[in-house]
Image 1 (cartoon, rainbow, N blue to C red):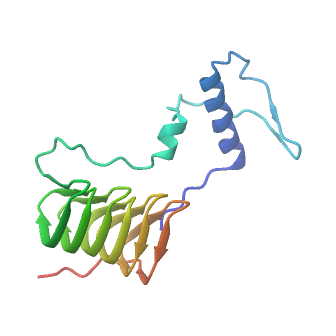
Image 2 (image 1 turned 135 degrees about the horizontal axis):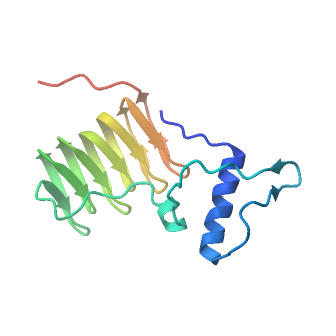
Length: 177
């Protein structure tokens, strides 16, 4: 599993910085920020860090570009039943039943429904998946994502609000012949 940890002071300073940018405030950055319990001095800036806007923070992962000729797409209001295999990536916006294998990434969009066995290097779930997931690298479940079934992945990232039910194995799947 991957956990991201930042101190309360860093989190608070990042939030204040974002609010100041959004409000266009020109207040002096050298002043100290006070909390009822503790005082947090502003940390010294070592190098400028890019800041994310609120919409960027709520979007942990973006799907791959649609223009890629190696990316297959199951469009919204479309369904696929059977076995689907790709040497690239697959994006699912509709409904899939059966078995889906991709050499690179499988992206299950919000609103998509999958009842299948999924195999890929990277799998990102923002929709609903029922079945077996065999991930060779990283499985990420976004806040709107739901997984119900057996999961096997060496790296698992579950965002707040996501749901994962079933057996979990934190290891790479056995290679299949």
